[in-house]
Image 1 (cartoon, rainbow, N blue to C red):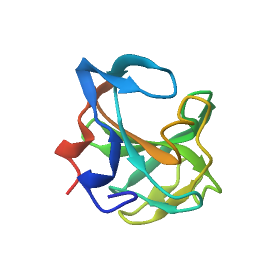
Image 2 (image 1 turned 90 degrees about the vertical axis):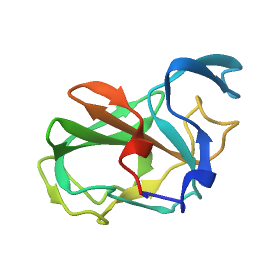
Image 3 (image 1 turned 120 degrees about the vertical axis):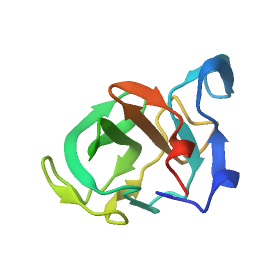
Length: 132
């Protein structure tokens, strides 16, 4: 697990077909990721080894790191600050990617969290299929 200790820490579950309720937005929408409760400044560990593909900032997920973990899979970590990685860097499972930032305006009601998305060949899949 990149943060927390397991499924009990999930605030918003993955849902590509059914909608889930986002408190901050006061609306139901699909969720291509899981949102895991975390403390501000908590270390975020790489869930799998890979190569840092991109580091971007978005209004919704804040500072976001995408890691190519091989075989068409990508792990995407959002709501970060104080990154420990840079583009094209190889990282091992368990390496510190960065730290939990204050939540973006899209997640103020949910509280500090890690946005964690997994894509297979560009399509979002349930991260719980890969996490142990």
